[in-house]
Figure 1 (cartoon, rainbow, N blue to C red):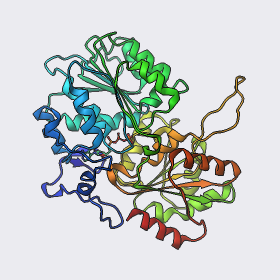
Figure 2: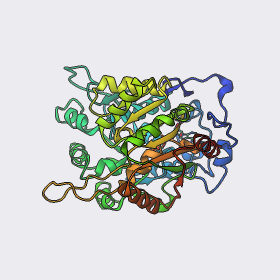
Figure 3: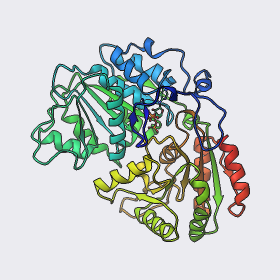
Figure 4: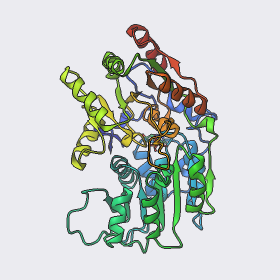
Length: 445
Ligand SMILES: Nc1ncnc2c1ncn2[C@@H]1O[C@H](COP(=O)(O)OP(=O)(O)OP(=O)(O)O)[C@@H](O)[C@H]1O
């Protein structure tokens, strides 16, 4: 099975199982080469057969077109599947296959003869929850797995109870369904947090996630935390949340993958950023692109302006209603839209292989407030940066990110990002389209 036009999995013609990574530019690197390179995060010495998976799940994996596990899958799966179940805190770069590791664990631990919820997975956005569900359904294709969403507007009004084996959702709706006993948690034995550092952050979803955990059985639940990033300030909470966990960790400088080439453009001012973005349009539409803004209103404003000037772009953010959000991301997955202007709502986890360019129209910032709630000095949000650029360069593919800087402050932010990630960010001139195209082609080769 390969991803269909919707970006979800569906059966592929037999001859389409190829290791060649497709891109709009000619690409010579093959996935097989990378999976044979011990320095690659995709490397594995083992086969899926050696990881102790059930035959029905192996069928699901091969049907998705996977041939070898990645490093995180090889290392995590034996630990995740061993008995007695042990908690896991797992870190691996963006786009290296963490989803399969936790989805296979949920599917392996479910007793399909019991119509009870046995695994719960939380993600920070409805878009990511829906994507994870598509992987559960694809990998579980040869099992009798029943699934249900816990995302806004997903259950018909008046649903009294859910008996699905696996429930995937966002923390607010999950809390609501557990509290109202629509989901019976008494038989839950696996609890997964994808993007765990974000889910546990006290400034973010931490409280809600803890509320969900407190409604699960006190013992006998295997807690699985996965992310590409685990900043120091959430590590200690993660250790408490998933006690005695097996840990797979990355060094700080290993967190970004080398196949994403990072650039910056020195814009004159805020308005010039818009002009530069418009001048990039042709390059943005060679493959697909995601443009990240700090605020919803910026995303809307840019999208409206560009549309009015005849460019085809879409915008997506958390202020849109659920059905509209689903339609926009589905349309982008299908490739009907090539440029998506958005906020941090889809900075994490979203896996669309055709995305070969990410633009940080605004660099991501931490919400710094002093004790009185006033805005203090701004600092770049390094983790969000890493996740944003990780929307390209999925599973060994090449990708490009471009940061727009336009004043002293944004320059300083970019330098801090460069320092923290240990990766060079190369300048591209804003006024030389040919050179820009050349650089980009080189980066994608
Ligand atoms: N063993 C494999 N062989 C081939 N493709 C794989 C394999 N494992 C995962 N993939 C593919 O790699 C892509 C990235 O996987 P996934 O979305 O799980 O990454 P991730 O590590 O969760 O990234 P992020 O940190 O951004 O959430 C997906 O398209 C997935 O189908």
